[in-house]
Amino acid sequence: MLNFTSFILCSFVVLGLYGSPANSQERPGSICLLKDAPHQCGAFCLSALGSLYNQMAAFKKSISKVESSLVQMNTQMDGSIYDQMADFKTKMHSQQESLFKVESTLVSSKGTWDQINIQMEGLQQGQKQLTEGLNKLENVLTNKEERIASQMEDLRKNFDARLDRMQDQVKAGSNKLEEPKAGTSLKAIPPKFELIGSRYFYIEENNPQNWTTAANTCREMGGHLASFKKEDELDALKDRLHRYYRYWIGINDHKEKGDFVSLASGKPAFLNWAPYEPYYFEAEQNCIFLGVCSSGELCMLLNPCTIPLNFICQADDEI
Image (cartoon, rainbow, N blue to C red; front, side):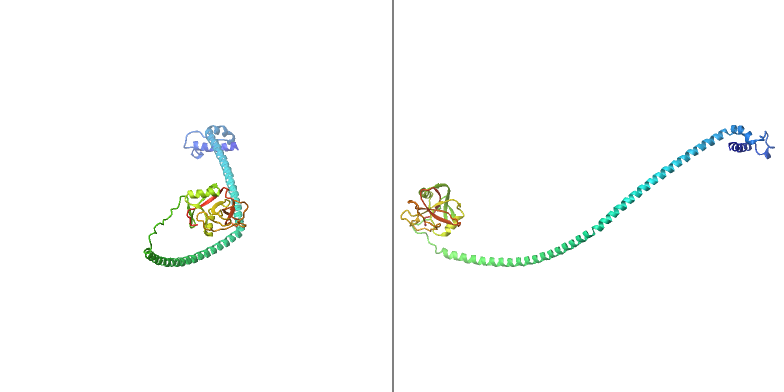
């Protein structure tokens, strides 16, 4: 095969160098006549076409490299495309699974959404009812405010009228006032005494004394051991006294047993005995103390006068 190829190439070269036999008469020189061209042209043609053959061999080698590179590139491109397609298919499959899960979740939660919608409708209905109720209340309040304003105006007018009448009465009564009579004077309230109910009292709870000493202490303060005219005065004192303390008061029967009078005035005083009182179990049992009974009310008990107790003073000498 190589000899035949060499022969063909040699023929083309000879024809190119010396021309065809028909034109050989016009050109001077010799003509290479080959009797056994395949064998005779080998050395001559190779020597004449060596450089061309080398170029063709190099070109063929380059073509082989290019073909190899193209094959490698095709292989790489095919592998990359196949990898990308496989990755794309994997992602598509994953997305399809996610979509199926979402669809399943939506289907399973449909009942929940229905319940939520029902509850929302109930809430909206309740809100509507509340709004209607508030509107009714606002109307009622508006009407009441109008009535109250009208009533307040009537009260103001009545008050003004009554105030005018009272002022007229004060003016009329001021003309009848008289100067205090000669020899009369108003008694000042001693220090430490406070208004409890309608009278002034002093309550001692930090310095217990016997009955006689307590009476002297009250006189030194400008008052007397307390006595009472009515039950209302005891009721006023009840909230000011300690539940478990006992307090000397000015009621006694020193002059005559069983005749209980006020130390300040000598007049009979109001008595509110505890159950089974007065009960005498000692000879010198002539003094009365005040305490809280089991009923919660203030009551009076008979006791020897020598026992130290807290005490109550009064500022006046009316009783």
